Image (cartoon, rainbow, N blue to C red; front, side, top):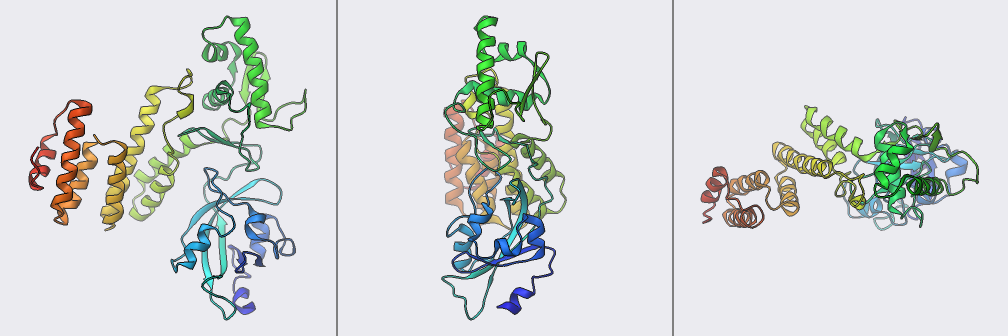
Length: 382
């Protein structure tokens, strides 16, 4: 075992090995530099308790009997994945990780020893004093230390709406604008009183330990204007989503494009500002734009799967699109063409029939000539 572990001593990847009980048994110099812990500090600790790894949307990845361990136990090859890991100094480090089993006489399929190899992700990691803000689906905000913003004050809609407005404006916003946006039906004095209370509640939500009278590291006020400090450096899923879709579209290598699409589309957890729909912060136009961008991105990903001969994956994506929007004719056409290529007439006809019914009931429309042509090939009578 020592000889095998020694191979990874000088790799530039952060390499750390765990035994069948997920206790760290090896920690190389690159891991020390990457995560801040010396080998003496790391070895002997349970890996998930030390690293607190989670995904970009806050889901816990590192845990007892984690999914990676279960994946390896089934004999599946280790895949690459991104992970936010808590550095010894408290900030998050974004790394890309791969895992492989260490097959030795002291190992077993039931309790395999694993080697994790981590390298810094090219994407910008979350910086100290910067927030991770998710607006696609139910609103989530993560502090720089990886903790989730929550609590009774945070549950107040106007508190969350205030943070969203400051984050999206990316600059100073006057009190007058904020009271008009958040309390349009109140007189100025009452609205200003509500604003002062809401600012206080937002600061306490973001910084529960903030002492009374102390300056907030996030929400500042000067000369009648409020500002989300470091606004340009906070991470917003809407920015990452749009940039990711754009990068995927211009990437020429299909497999790289697929990976970029998957990362970007994973950020779309639901409707934009899903739980702020009753405020003037919400915009129907923006909701529809992100909704359409997501469906278009899914279609483009499915087409890339077809291009790279991954037809089963393409079919799954088309089915996902039709479950979201039963009237999306372009996706149904692509799905039918894929099914007809395999002479799967019955399933193609079934989707043709469902599309026709959805178009008539929901939009009072008839299928396009191309859809009717495909339905005829599938022997589906409209």
